[in-house]
Image (cartoon, rainbow, N blue to C red; front, side, top):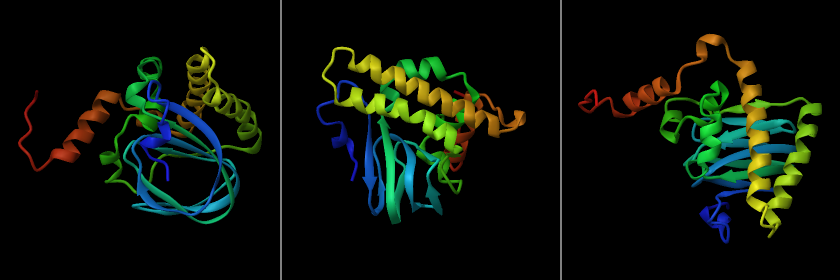
Length: 200
């Protein structure tokens, strides 16, 4: 199971990625953000709220503290991209104003307690194939001891995340483009409605 120990030896830069043959994995709560890119095979993806079939081209966006697992896996091949978003300030600074970034990465686990699924994107074959070069670059940098390792990781990470933000933005209507500050305020109100809430 992936835990914070997955960053062992890499605590100075909480971003890594690797190809993985995924077997059945019980429902668990993780301690980091994760993007799962399905490259082959199939499985049932399990969360607290839903079960859905996944196969090549599916991309799962999982927030910190997400609950998820896999079962009925059949030759499931994935790429795991693990990161601590709050420890990658440049990524947040550069992408914060992108509407797709707000929808994919602007929420915490509490937000999803009132919904039935985490964000998911499906890419056609040509697009998932074109991303694989960046995935190989990320894994190579993850394994490298080069002084350029962090720059290589961050560069490929930003290309991948920017692409996903653009793809997500294509799927939503203009009236869903809510400012991040409003989304955070709404999320806070939904989580604290039994309490007395002051303007500050």
